[in-house]
Image (cartoon, rainbow over the protein chains, first blue to last red):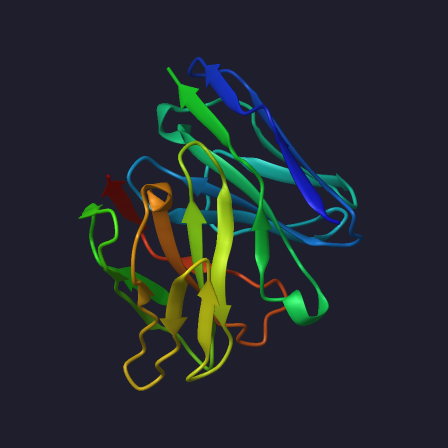
Length: 114
Length: 115
């Protein structure tokens, strides 16, 4: 069966420091991958998606970037964090076939920028 | 563009009460509709889905019917439990010819169930 892993679960970083969040998927190949952010008290906002290795699309201009160095690995990065980058970051992958419209989410990373 | 509007929360109920969380949407074409649930400190889990008009999604006692005429997908449960306390998100995937399957989410509704 397929599983999705995110780490770390919690992160506290100072303003101006770099960021790297990692997401990996097991049990499937060539998945579509997504990064979402959930700000406090708000819904989910799609940040990036990827349909294949090295293919990244950005939904919202911001201080963050994403990379997909391997088929089942998706990384969210920043060179210098801002206070406004605080939030709950969720990685997701999309199923294929009959489940192609369903996205499956990781447990998330709670990021606090101080 | 696509959008999803959920009833504002938080919603507080007693155990065994009836639950309704309203969700309406705006989308091009014929979207698929979803309810996701987020338990405290966790990621999102798919609760139920419907892919075409008049479909009823159901899971764990929750139900939602895809109403194209009213562009709605209200979530209901006849008798809630304390363990149902969570944040509930309505979402849609309009497809629209794209291949990446973008989900558009509502803002989420916090449900608290008291014993």
